[in-house]
Image (cartoon, rainbow, N blue to C red; front, side):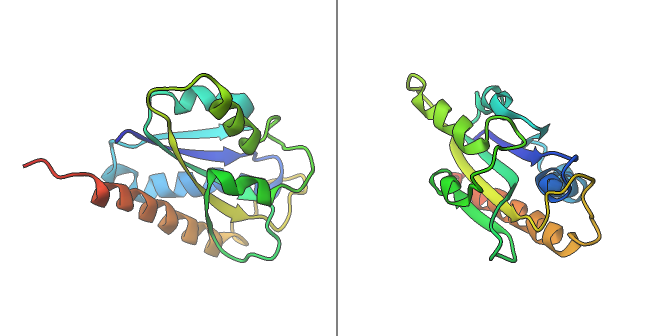
Length: 161
């Protein structure tokens, strides 16, 4: 199974950079153990996400979500994304939910991509950099969640005799 791990966000709006920071930390800690995993960091990706998904069986997207009542990492499926919309325009231009909906509406592909999302609840999206010290516990949880998602894949793949 060809998998891509994608960190999404923008470094210009504090907690909106959580997805990028989480994937960078995962890469520092575990990336060497998973050379088969493609890793991308996309700042304000919008439609640029679509070509990255091509050629992969599975994508794990890590992004900040508007979920004010949630204190930890969320594991979401593609169909869950609309529940976390703030109603405001996304910093990504086209939001992740809209981009994935467009991908699903295109002519059928012979090998559709399985999408898993790790959502990191934001406290603030004010202009400025991510306060990594304030987000330390959440980033640690996110790194473990990414590794757990990837470990599920490894365990579920058939063993060759």
